[in-house]
Image (cartoon, rainbow, N blue to C red):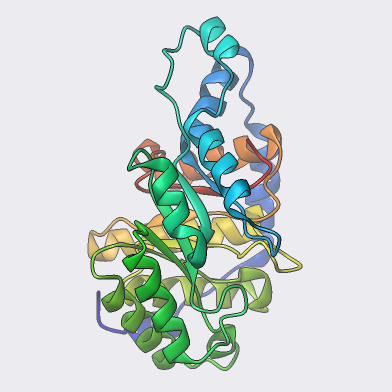
Length: 285
């Protein structure tokens, strides 16, 4: 955790036209083809937080998800690609907090389990309720906690309140990976996305995540570019590497290649690994 730096936050500026030019040119200028495309897509599989966050989730559905996460590609395709069996799996399994224990039982330590907590997806439950969700998830074995912020703090420029709340959640996670969901589509402006990213990192986020997947606007290249540049700025100033997780609406090979290229160009090859880059998805695989 770092001290809240209000001057740094207030001095953030975003040039929307420049952002749009950058993301449009990226998808037109950079392509990955043939064998290289296969390699990039295999890498993408290893970065997926394979997710189910529906009201209809059951033990059976989570069990199928876990099996799929451990064996994401058919044996026939693995043989064709000359990849050994059981050598490729997704980054983590992501479920509601009350299904963490069942996922842990199925996976038996072979994959991390991420729990969505703190009043997902709106983040408007009482502070005590949200704290208890984190505590219960960790008791059930969660390796990672995806929290959702109270977006109203951002919209009202109440950065101290946002910082203090995330700091409380960080303390409760007791060393577990904390992924902070900004709900970028609800934050009004890209400048707000940049400011919320910075506050979350100051307060102890290990990852910043674009969306819950439930907003009208989820992950896109514009809000992702802003978050990546704040991660870079934070790293240059503090020396601490923060992870990035786009989530919501990423459902095709073309989509995921764009995010891989964006992260590669903005942060470099060192960020293209599950410790620093995850992709939240349910249908992408």
